[in-house]
Length: 322
Ligand code: ZN
Image (tube, rainbow, N blue to C red):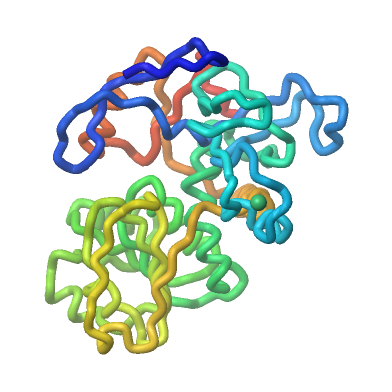
């Protein structure tokens, strides 16, 4: 199942489960779009960056630059968007993301990493971080404190969302199907409360208590019970895998005046803003570093959901903490 193109002769493929069935099938790496490094060369027209700068590249490789979304710095919603993996770059070549010692990126899509942030722990913020930051910002939760927010799911996205929620001064509740996440959420990540969503008593007790919920779960699930945790005019935002199946409740009473929205990553401007805030609040992703010869082992563990919370591959062969 290896991919080759006229432009790229190197292949990156492996075996992994594509859904919760656990069935292992050929897999071409896609999620290699959280990339950090040091600039080694700049083009003649680049003014924003210089050699030696600490930078990151997230999901976006290129956009049309002309549509209303590009013009309003919402280029993540451009319908010509090209991603840093399986996209087509300006020069017509296929993008292969970050599994290489070198990456060429257009400076419009490059983000500066603050000096106090470890490069490896900053990397996942370029996708997981911005994915959860943008809905918080869009719902006025970055500058306004003291709201009661719920985070459904405590994985790569959810754990960063908890850190943001606390840094921005909110009461944060983690909602999970896994009892073992309670201690982790409260003791390690600083969450204020925990709801075991498979426990009807706990769900009932917390009805109509939350102003805002961020749903980070990628497996198929129904939203009905979660909506009832919201106050009647609250908002639930769905992030993460764009094709995740959601069962929406049909009964209008469940909705009340509640709003359900989606959100997909974020713009480059928002990514830089998020990264600067992370530098200021000392927010980093919790990661496990692996080297290139441990990728298979990493994939095996990903299949079992056994990672806290992101694997970061150290391509350079040495962890570049600072
Ligand atoms: Zn566009």
